Image (cartoon, rainbow, N blue to C red; front, side):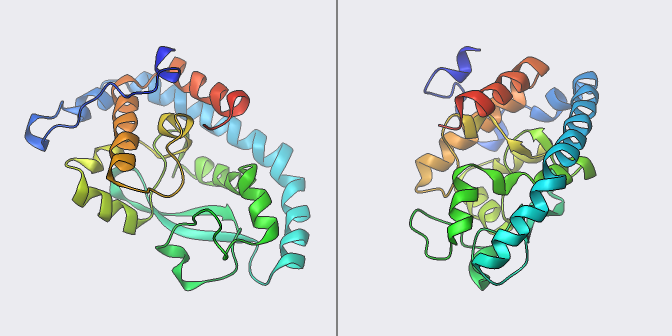
Length: 221
């Protein structure tokens, strides 16, 4: 799809009272979201059985040897409808109180040696397939935010919480377009949100498939 090749979003952010009504767009695709949920469950089961079943014990040993702390990092994130859920990740930092409101940045000294490797290959995200199986997340969708980020971006961008109309994803259109990691300025936040809005308007099995292919083969920009 051309949207995965182009460099600019095609959605302009308007004031809340002039925005396209996205809720009927999402509600009007029950068949797609039912098929999407079936795919999510099937893929989550495959990842849990074929990858995490042996990877988790191995990574547990590496993480314990590298630094003190739990194997998994659990963090409250914003899900569909603004509901809270516990997001699972492999721990990549030393235990620190700022982890729930301060995102990692390049050269962050909190990141462990094993954690840096996990982040580089996005392996730290694999436990989120547990969230997919539980129904908190989808494989593809807007990335779930920490509550601090959600509140901050909602103050900067009108209608920002529209992105919570669907389940958040392990990967998404904004991420394959290069908008991932810490937000450096308002422009970064706006462009990422524009891609999230594009996904809401154009969500389909074909778009999900192209995002997955870009994630797996093309990588994240």
